[in-house]
Image (cartoon, rainbow, N blue to C red; front, side, top):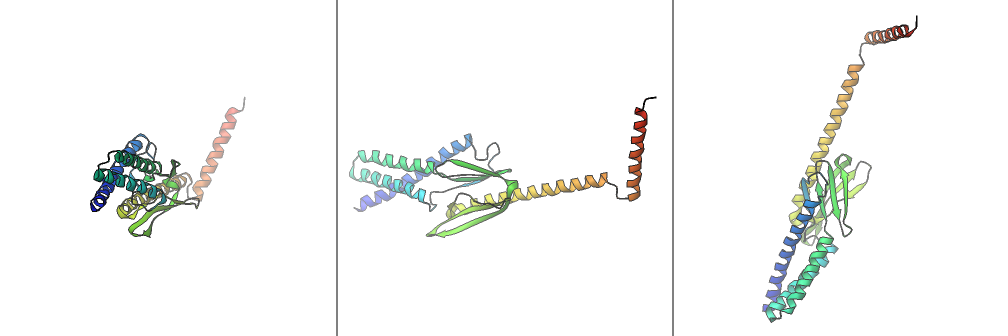
Length: 233
């Protein structure tokens, strides 16, 4: 009995590592072909990890545990046909993980995210983001979760995909800090453009009232001379 238990635990660990590695490779290929940020490069990213306490991942863990249990029994009892069932359970877990995959990315111009089984990708310009918050929620022991919450210019609140705080909080904070940096650059650009417009208006409009009056009379004189030129003799 102890041998079966040990074999099952080892098998669960192996199939879990295989699932994580395989899913990561498939996602990398998918994102290289179709990045979240479109033509812009994803500068900072985070994605839902296998340790995130979410309902979709309960199904993944159930499939991995079933695969590990079947593989452990196949090895302990010498029943090769159980390996086929273990493979089916593992493929089901991998498929569901990929189908419900969630990820957030930030580029120099956009914040993009993909959430849930609908495969929907949303995107907002950095110029439309007013506030960025990193939200942490405690869980069972170290299994808390964290995510980024955005407040847009129109007042709407947006919650980006969640991930496990264990091993994921640093990535979430990196994405949030990058978004704040781009927001600061957008604000500086707006202020620079506003200053340039004010300086341009100041150059076109002389401050001295006497000079303004002289310019007005000069314009009237040129207009009168133009009318005389156009009058036939």
